[in-house]
Length: 350
Image (cartoon, rainbow, N blue to C red; front, side):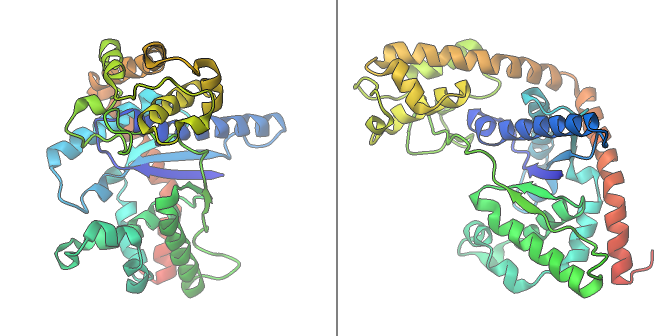
């Protein structure tokens, strides 16, 4: 297996990012490592399974952005991923801009992608809104760059959520058409990647509004737990989190119509690796005066090591640069055979 996945370098990561995506990456990395050990024990290759994780900074320029913020966000995201458990010794971690093959392959695949395919992308419709004529070409064509991101490395599997399934299907369509048009069935240029649907990620909502997702764009810092928050800040935010006057129920059905209570219980369940029902067996009938301190302690226990490591890395710019440079060198080496094969298949002389 070769798993490839990317994340936009938004910076200022919060609990929702960690529980929603990053923790699944760490889990996949660890599962790959276990698979390699098992293969080695059976007499096979010890490194056949591999994860590539990248910071999608080329995707970030498809919409208006602040260059200084993009650079800062890229470094922060790299530090956060390592702090959360991505190991550059076991996974390939890099940013797109250091691997020009991503942009090269996108251009080569633009000849295969079709306008009609891109026009049907629901995220294009959502992001462009009514002003499609005023949007950048990059925003329209970024699903082709997404296809290049995974096809470049002969990815066998790509983690996808509901909002990305359509883009992976497009990548498969592009790969299939290119193989049909320019290669043979016996020697295709591209592998058609299959989706991995990660374990159901906890949907983490705002601490101030249980109907809205936790977001860095919320003007109130009290609405979210940031990965850099210290213990006092975490406890204060949990203590002031919006709730209702009723005690916690003993069963999950009792949380219907109580979005803030459901959110806090969901966070506890996700952090502890237990089900909502198990949490309610322990805390059912209790008020938030008992539950919130327990949740705060669990958050501090989980996030303090991440926050400490994150801060250490941000203070060591050379370490982050070295991690990204090493990952980019690995990625460029892995990408070269596919890019060369694509040029040859198209009849381009280099």
